[in-house]
Image (cartoon, rainbow, N blue to C red; front, side):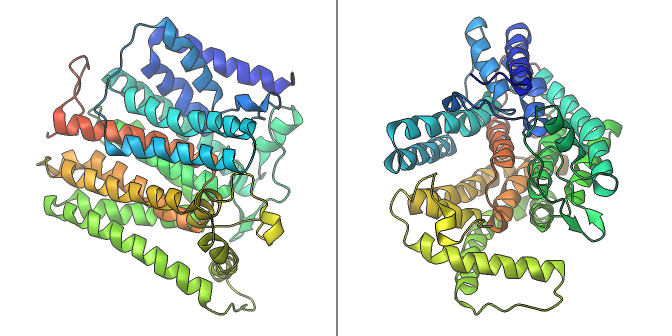
Length: 447
């Protein structure tokens, strides 16, 4: 058994999750232990052995919460929806693919990973925030993380000392080794934050913005309230200091979607055709990039260089994705054998690793989210009431669009599935009202 210093940190997180669950309930544990651990602890070393446990910085809290649940008397209910089933089916396909191309142990290992890193984030956030007190606690915890931890770290990284937290954690034998190179753009260092890559740092900041707006609007807080505004500005600053095109592209897309559905009730009908057009557009762009000659521009700008690199990657991965078997080539696919050390397109990666069924089922999430949001927005008669729904939906779809230009990194997708679970419950509360046991009704509901 690995007994390094990082194990002590992981066990402390497990204990915190257990203690808060037993003493204050699951909702409070998700709010003040789990969500902050996803934001801040992804660089903590994993438990090396036994690997099947998948114990790391952002799953340790899950273990504590699950251990504490039998010791509480809480009961949780939610209205099942097709999206719930889709999330489960996606995990089943990953497990089947891993088992088919590996051994039984491989399937079990990835099954546990899917449970901890996809199903638990989604369903914990689906059931944890029915009580307004837990939403308030989550809002406060995320504001503290963004304002007093993430933002100061980003200000130090961007100009003074890149990856300094990574170096400190590694020197203490707690964190993973820092990236070999500190990426640089526009005369500034790109901020890694508490993630393995600046793109992850930007994407997770975008999802954080979604959480903050939704929690604020479902607890009766205005976005102009001092601490809410400070938290939003801190998360936005961290996003842009990643100096990454992908999260900036995702933020612009989310901003456009939000503006389209926020102000007029009738514009909600743009969501469904917009998603369909986006999917068709991504297919056409992929085919275009895969078939056009590759040109190399001398003295190209960062944006042009990024485009040319992605074209080269898509050209190499497109044929492999098109020929992928039903369940893909498996999670342990050897990319280097095909000279594809990095495929900056999540959807091609999905097709290659898990097959065409996984790809199109995942893509269908965007359409199902749009359908669900369109129905919910139609029941809200005020501009103020649409803010939380519009913002949460926009961030979910914005990240899905941004994933077209980057791989589906575990850390920001874990946070994204958490936001998806929260939004599913917010949709429910808006349509049918909050559960009877809830102390307070979401402020976004038909006010």
